[in-house]
Length: 269
Image 1: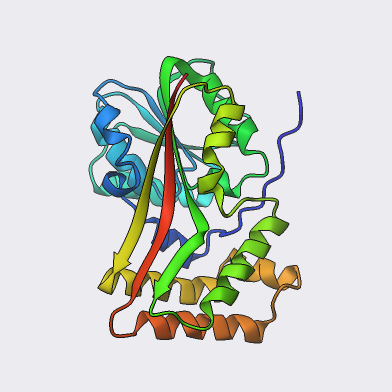
Image 2 (image 1 turned 120 degrees about the vertical axis):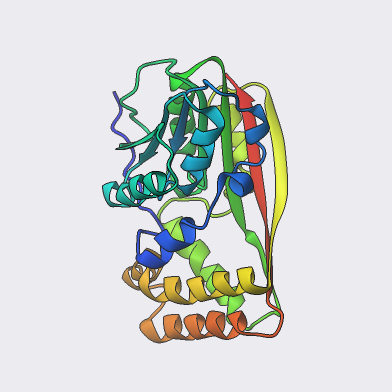
C-alpha cells in the first residue's frame, strides 16, 4: 500500500481560525445536500473541524449515526462540546487520515466534505477513499472555495498582496487555493462518472463582512498562514502587520462587502 501524502494544513488551528469555522452551519454550507438527506442515512463528514456543520447534518439524518472526521484531535473537542450544547446525540467524532480511513467498504450512504480538498496534496486519492466507503448508489457531496475570485468593496491596497501571499503559501504546501474550479476534474478522476455542479456566490455584507475582516486581521498575523509565510521567506513580520492593518481598517469602513465563488459537486457512487 502506498504511504499517504503528508499534507500541511495552510490555515492551522489558531483560535482565530477555529472560531471562524465555528460560525459555519449546514443550512449555508450544505444547502445543495440537505434536500437529498433523509432520516436513517449514515453520513461521514470528512474534515469536520469544530462540528457546527456536522450537527446540522446529524439532525437531518437522525436517528442514523453520523461520524465527523478530522486530522486534528484538538479541534474535535470543540466539535464534541458543540453537539452536546445543541443536544445532538447521533454524532460522534474521530481523528483520522482521509487517505486511509479506518472504515469498512460501503459503510456510508453519504460522504460530505466542505473546504477540505483545497488543502490536500492528492485530492483525487482522498476522493477515491471517500468513494470506497460509500455504499453502491451512495452520495458524495463536496464543496470548495476559489480564492482567486475573492473581491472586497471598498477595495483596499493591501488586499491583492494578501491574496497573492495566500496563494503562494498554499502552493508551497502543494495545495490548490482555487479548488472550486478544479473540483469537477478531481471528482471524475476518482471514478465518479455522473456529477452535478452546484455553484454559488458567497456574499457578506455589513456586520458579517466586518467579522470576516476582523478574523483575517488576526489570521494573517497569528495563524499557520502567517507562520508558513515567514518560514518560506514569502513575507516578513512588518509585511504581515501591514496586511493585518489593511484588513482591520477595511472591516471598520462604512459599508464593507465581500464576495467569492464556491463550487459544490454531488455525485452518486
